Image 1 (cartoon, rainbow, N blue to C red):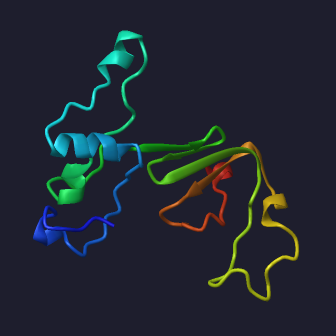
Image 2: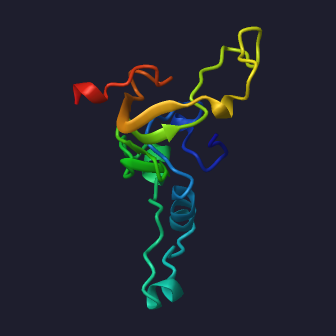
Length: 139
């Protein structure tokens, strides 16, 4: 999803597996054009700084690791490194086929399909990217 003449030629057409959140693009683009991303007015009122990190070193190949190690998804989900933690009664808990909907699709809305994570569910999203195996009991 990153392309163009500014991207080093050695990085063009490459896959990047480092963690990047949408909030990181503001800090990244600001740094790329030499603009301070700090919201000084917000800081005067005691508001927290921006949540983004400059990920250009990762995207450009200067660095192999992302400065981001966590991505909060909702108030009930967090990705931390290679793990995703869920807590609560998770809706939309369904897996579609390669083509969805298909002949095996449920005849009811997916939003009413729940996964019980009241005690917490943990998935290794690197080894199990489709989140089929809850490893919470192993940790």
